[in-house]
Every structure is written in C-alpha cells, then in structure tokens.
Image 1 (tube, rainbow, N blue to C red):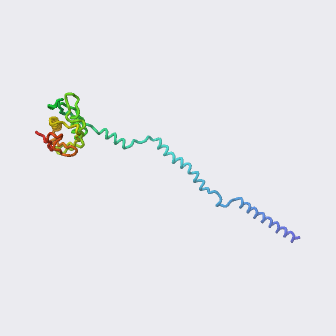
Image 2 (tube, rainbow, N blue to C red; image 1 turned 180 degrees about the vertical axis):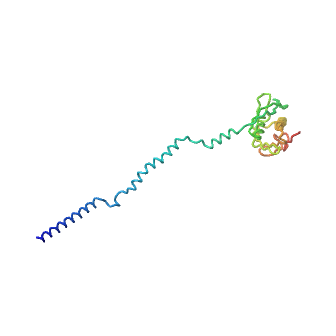
Length: 217
C-alpha cells in the first residue's frame, strides 16, 4: 500500500511539473521576442516631430506676414535723381539776317548739369531760332561728336554734312557767331573746331580755319 501511494505521489508531481512547463511555454509564445516588438523610442520621436514641424512653420508664416523691404537699388536711384540739379544762365547767341549780310545778336536761356553740357547747349542754341528775322548759320544737321575742355582750351569735334555748308560769306559769319558765343565764357581762352576728328584747313572750303582760334582780348 505504501508503495502504491508513493507511486501515486510521484505521478502527481510529474503531472504538476509538466503542467507548469506547458504554462510557461504558452506564456512565452504569447509574448513576442524583444527585437520583434515596435521600439517605443522610435514612436516617441515620430510623435515629437509634429510639434517641431509646427514650430518650424511658424517663423515662415510670420516672415510672410512682414511687408517686403524696399530694395537698395531703388533707394540709390531715387537719391541720385534728387541729387542731379541743373544750372541755368542767359547767354548771347548770334544768327544772321535773311540776306546773310551781318550778325544778329539775341539772348537765350540754357540749362546744363555740367560745364561740358554748358558748351553743348550754347552750340545747340546757335542751331535754332524763334524768329524769322534771325537765321541760324549752324544747321541742325551738324552734330557734336565730342567736347573737351582743359586748361582754358575748348575743343569741339563735329560732323559736317554737305547740306550744312555755306558760301564764303556765310562761312565767315558762322565762325564769327561761334567764336563770339563761346568766348563769352571767361574760362575759354582758345577754341578748336575739328571735323570728324581732323584739323581741316577750312571748315566749309572758303575761309582758313585756325587751330586753335584764340581769344582776341
């Protein structure tokens, strides 16, 4: 009887141990290995990216709300335009009568931003007249190619088309009108007239042309 009871106890113990092992295996099967579980750190980072994204967008939204800054180029342009100022003066200008017998003096107002422009405006004043009795000796077809002024010496380089050439009397009056107009500026001591960059012997083929023409007084 004792042997049978001992054998029954051993069987019961074996059954209990077997049941315990089976339970542990079931529990182990229900819990996946650690490497197969989703990492909690990765999920936290993804969740943290949303606030970071919102904060990153905020400065952009604030920047768009700011008014655009004025460009430095437009400011410089406006400033330059404000600083450009022209001087003006009344000068004597010389024409001829309809018969080309003498010079006719009148006055004109010229405006100029620089000294070289002053001489150009004076020359252009010789090319136009507001009266029928005052005939320009210098045609509007004559163009100034270059102006140089240095140490009292004024040089005009002009183009002279054939249609602008005058006879002997007209050529002499034209040179006199030009010298009287330019020598009224006290800083001009000599005047040199070039045609297409060349110091020609005669402006229109009738009167000798000095290089340079000097002030008489």
